[in-house]
Amino acid sequence: MHQLVLLRHGESVWNKENLFTGWTDVDLSPRGEEESRNAGLLLKEHGLVFDLAFTSLLKRAIKTLWIVLEQMDLMWIPEHKEWRLNERHYGALQGLNKAQTAQKYGDEQVKLWRRSYKVRPPALAEGDQRHPSFDPRYHSLPGELLPSTECLQDTVERVLPFWQQQAVPALQQGKRILIAAHGNSLRGLIKYLDQVSDDDIVGLEIPTGSPLVYQLDRDMKPIRHYYLKDLAQDG
Image 1 (cartoon, rainbow, N blue to C red):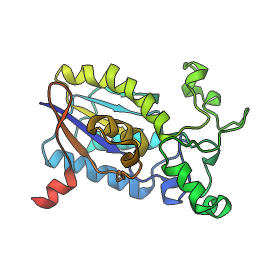
Image 2 (image 1 turned 180 degrees about the horizontal axis):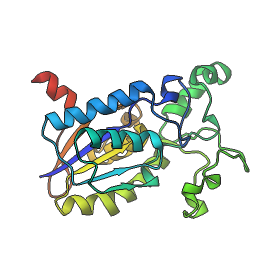
Image 3 (image 1 turned 135 degrees about the vertical axis):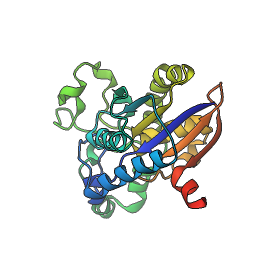
């Protein structure tokens, strides 16, 4: 049996302000830091240990991972930052208030942008400084890999190579893995692991700062998965 834990970052300052975030590099809110500490304590309390950790290139996920590992006294384990674990890119919506955007474009249109599996939000205009091509952390990547907007399907398609090329080989070596990432990049992994349909995945909510434990068989198929907080409540 192989152990995998997925963790959405703690609440960010833009989560708190109800803004579209995407690849914008915002920090954790005080509540998000507390959620991260609690996640680390919960993992430690239940005796989970990790040999390897992955996170995105965005500080809200990185800091969540650091706080968790500090609580577990595991800051020494290897960690890898992977752009493919970044949040879905929300294009020109990034930085806009979700409620105000709904007032401007209508609830149905914004619901399509937010929840449809294949509908992309409006793309960033050419030369927009928010485009990842202007960010030094992505300068080593080919330009065609850098999005100006993404739908959930796009996010799933970029996450799967990470899973197949990095996570699976590590799991096959017996490593116990923690992935601290984002709501939509984790949806991509969950969709693949649990064979969730295109229609059903858009309604899947992943809470911030709540460890999701997967037990996988030798073929990397889920035997069982559960939120650790639910196990704690049942106990």
